[in-house]
Image (cartoon, rainbow, N blue to C red; front, side, top):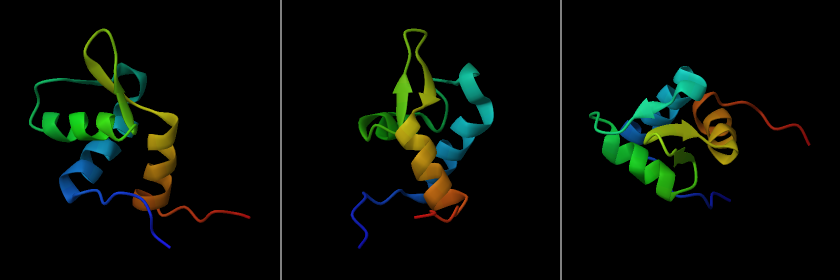
Amino acid sequence: MWNEPYLETCCRSALHRLTLVGRLGRPDGLKDGPCLHRLADMGLAEQGTDSRFRITAPGRVRHADEILKVKKVA
């Protein structure tokens, strides 16, 4: 059963971009800023003291499940 909050297409794209930039992070104030804040509210991203957004461990899991469609091995 699906029990995770739905991610809009724009937020899925923002989550994917967070994986691409790695530890550098994405700065606040870009067009995807509202999505980055939404991802942070969901615990999938975090905003550092330098105000850049980085993906979290739960964000990596969600990215693998929903965007990369990686199958879970039981």
